[in-house]
Structure formats: structure tokens, C-alpha cells
Image 1 (tube, chains in turn green, brown):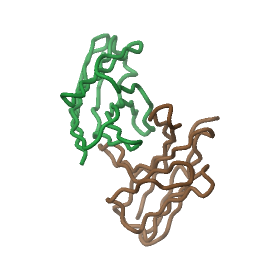
Image 2 (spheres, chains in turn blue, cyan):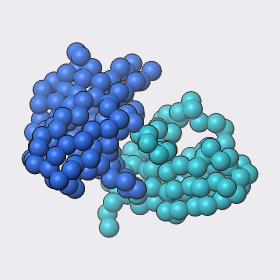
Image 3 (tube, one colour):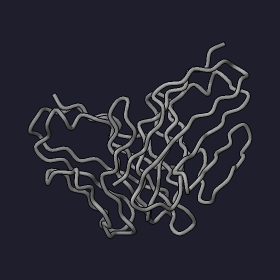
Length: 108
Length: 114
């Protein structure tokens, strides 16, 4: 089976850095996705990690450790528009299992 | 617009009625996925297709749910004899295999069963 855990809520200040963690336990694993979802909208792709290590993409970076079943999403220079839910998803043979999302609130 | 589209965007129905939703994926994508999402939870996998073949269906789904992708392009999801517990956002996503599993989501169909 698949089990994905991430914190329910986080709060951070505009301009700061925040790290959202995700742990997974899966029966098969190809890679790990991070998606951003604003209220009432569909998820949008942020990153996909297959190999161990850190991948940086602008203000967003994502890290994966396959041996530890662990990933994190790092958001730098936070902006108010970054307030959203952040979903991690473990994928295996095309099928993705999502966590319940971390609701990030960015305060001025 | 070349993204994933879904119709209708909203559907209100009475318990016991049948409903059908449509998804048009990005044209060159051969994989199509259906998810269900309720408030405060992540998308829950329902089923997925590669071209016209339905490769996997969640064991969580009852026999009231059926999906088709007859020509390997658009897909339909039908729910028969709807129940109040079926109220949710139904999301469709598509991807191009084998270039990666990145899925592009449509805007969703919000179903309300009264």
C-alpha cells in the first residue's frame, strides 16, 4: 500500500524561507512530485524528483532521499501569492498517490 | 487553449440520478487519469488509461463508477445511482509517457448530490 505524510498547516512570513516535509511508505516507487493548489483550483506542477538530491528551480527547490522515504519542498523569498496547499505525491508505474496537502499561510 | 478541459464545471443532482463527466486531455498525451478530491484532502486516484486501455482502477471504487476512453482521446466518467457521499471535485489529468510522469490537471468538475 501507499502512505504519504505531510504537516497539515504551516505559517511563515513574507520574504522568509519555509521547508515543507513529506514522508512516504510505498510498495513501489518511481519518483516524487510536488504540486501547488490554490483554493478552488486544480493542482499545478512544481517539481519531480527521481534521484536523490536537491533540485533547484527559481525560488522553489525540492529534495529527495529514497533510502529514507523523505522529501521536502523549500520555498525561498516567500510572497503572499505563495499561500496555498502544497501536495506531495509518490508515483509508481504512472499511478500517483497524494498526501492530504500542507496549507501554507504567508503573513505580511 | 491547449490545456486539459473538463465539462461540466459544476453539476448538481439528486440522489439516485446518474451523472456523466467529460475530460479532454492535452492532445499529444496518451495517459489520462481520474481523481476525486474532497475538502482538506489530496486527490484520490480512481483510474487511469494509456491510450484507450484502462490499465488500473482503484479498489475503492464501487461498481457504480465506470470510465471510458473509446478512441484514446477524450474520456468520460459515469456515476450511476449517485449518493451524497459522491459529492466531491472530480479531477482529470493527462501526461505523456514515457517522457515522465508529470500530470497536467484540468479545472475539475464539482459534483453536489442533494
